Amino acid sequence: MTTTADIAIIGGGIAGFSLASAIGGRARTVLLEAEPELFHHTSSRSAEQMQPTYGPAPVRRLTSASIPRVQAIAEGLGRPIFTPRPLLWVGTTPDRHHLDELLATVLGLEEIEPREAVALLPALRPDAVHAAGIDRSAVEVDVPALLEAYRAAAVAGGVEVLPSSRVERAERIGDAWRLTAGTAVVEAPVVVNAAGAWVERIAALFGARSRGLQPLRRTVAVAVPTGRPVDPAWPMASDVLDTFYFRPRGRAVLASALEDEPSEPEDAQPRAEVVATVLDRVNAATDLALRETETTWTGLRTLAPDSLPVVGRDADVPGFYWLAGQGGYGIQTSAALGAAVADDLLGTASTIPGLEGVLADLSPARDALPA
Ligand SMILES: Cc1cc2nc3c(=O)[nH]c(=O)nc-3n(C[C@H](O)[C@H](O)[C@H](O)COP(=O)(O)OP(=O)(O)OC[C@H]3O[C@@H](n4cnc5c(N)ncnc54)[C@H](O)[C@@H]3O)c2cc1C
Image (cartoon, rainbow, N blue to C red):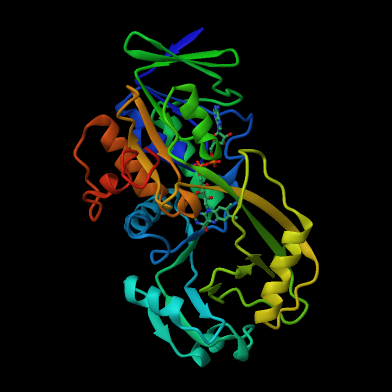
């Protein structure tokens, strides 16, 4: 049976569902997800942070605009969705270059004395902290609750969700696209490519040229310290050289060594040597003495060559819209980006304060992307 719609969204992660919830009842929308389970890939494998001072400028604007929208979702749910989790940038070498660059370019980031950083997070070894900066506006977000809220809002708005529907074929029929996904056939004039690590494969199905989007592995290890108990009020610590981050997670800490290894789109799994590096690096800067992991996971962050998301109509392929390349920012930007893209697709004036012109910076036609 063929389902017809105004908009078909390919990808049932946070990108696809934040958009679907923002479209709501304003257009007939179908969302196709390859896996039987929603949110199986990167969206359920994050560090769950929303950090307004983290990322390139358009990402920071989207994050700042997303926080009040997620707060409104929490009010609708009737329970909190945020935990305050300031982001503590730590200079672990005498070279101040990276911290100075951050302080000079990122509004809202405040320099603090190394001894204040250690007072906020006593697990840090004093000799490992040469300089520090803090973003007190950063928060941790309950990602499963946020994902479920987007899903529920999409369904309440009439969006048809088709799990176990891997799009394998796209044909142009008149002014519409016909998508074949197993036994499902969907026809829609507009198709949104929100397929996470698979976005380049989806683009190829439509004959769209590559935008150089590359999935990169990133592994997280969760371990209970043997050196000292965890205080849930600790900030998240992130080395300015991007060699490690960690933050409390119950009685454990969640940590990463921020590896960026290119990968095929796949169900990525952790590797023992990367997990060992995570523990070694956190142990070198702290007295946490992490030994055994409770759990580990690996997700794929998909980035364009200039590390900005790729969002907008493809000028060469009618009805094909990119919502891709959210990299390490797909959770924190989702609420504002989903709403901005819904307005763009529906041709309605954007009502989101602070986002004027942001989609132009993310255009799939920008010079930084492969021609
Ligand atoms: C370790 C780690 C930590 C992170 N921490 C943070 C953080 O703290 N804050 C933050 O903002 N971001 C963070 N991120 C990034 C964030 O998780 C991603 O940017 C975001 O989840 C990407 O969402 P997505 O919907 O684009 O991709 P996905 O969640 O991967 O969804 C894409 C979906 O498309 C589906 N799909 C693929 N091909 C097809 C097809 N042919 N047909 C139908 N469906 C298809 C897939 O099955 C998948 O479900 C982190 C990422 C990692 C790996």
